[in-house]
Length: 385
Ligand code: GDD
Ligand code: MN
Image 1 (spheres, rainbow, N blue to C red):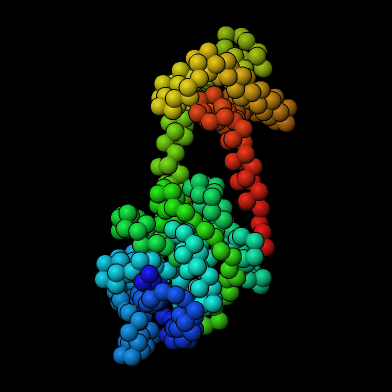
Image 2: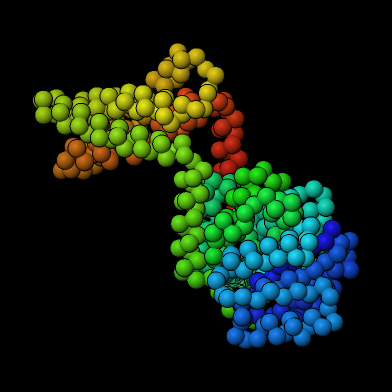
């Protein structure tokens, strides 16, 4: 195999030479043709000049320069170049600042050889770690990014979704239109991972110890974080059209619920009774629309009667949650208008309903397999060190 290690650089003059030396020392124990592609965005500190000087007697060293557009943009250019110009069979992503240990490279490539399509140098599997002396701010930043990627964007199969230390088979990358990932900054990591998961790539995580840079400084900024947060929700919405439909249906259900509640109270019915009645009407309304629109395509293979029975039980659970919440709110805040309590109680019952509808009433899979998925997710989310 021909493998290109892509190293994006912006002002890494203090690191890059040492890193190239360290990488070269590893090459002797890797049974492949190794190349390094530095993607430098015209660093003012002259990083590119260091590369150019070394290139004269280093055939495995390549340089790509360009305008600074962000880490993701640099990787997209670097990957295209590795595939099309260098003819790489696999590429690696790696930082220039020694946060990623060159000594981990042979292990990662061995995992590729063992059949993985994508190998992640992971900080969040057993044996991996982030620096112990990281302040709360950085720890939260990193953990939150991962939790958002896993729970919001739904990439729960992977423990370290934002890792920037990876090896990827070229055949997988060739199936992706890289520029269409439309990722300028660090969001590239989850955008690419999401594509890999969509292709059912075999992903292996290898524990690595991420160390802090000792030279130069981080380039992660607020714009990167904003782009990241927008993307996790965008992925969520795109990959979960079902949920989107459910929300739209639910929004009409809310209107029905509140209208019926108001009408009943105006007609002299006690709020504590009007509340569940309004919910019942809204649930029936939601069922008709959900059955047609939201879950209509997912054929559960269940008889209409079975679906109806389950639907009624699921609705009852939602109703119970709604009523209990309504009761609790009116007890805790006696001065709150009942309509407000009724509206607030919609949130927890909506979640209850969605989980039961999607995983039980209209699901093709049995609840048990879904439950085991949730349990796996919950245990995998536990921080491991
Ligand atoms: N060409 C180019 N252009 N390189 C860049 C740019 C850019 O706009 N921004 C950053 N880099 C380079 C840096 O020079 C470094 O080699 C590498 O990308 C990582 O940048 P750092 O600024 O050191 O990133 P970090 O340490 O904050 O983030 C690391 O951890 C993140 C997860 O916590 C990286 O590994 C990220 O990829 C990872 O998502
Ligand atoms: Mn860094």
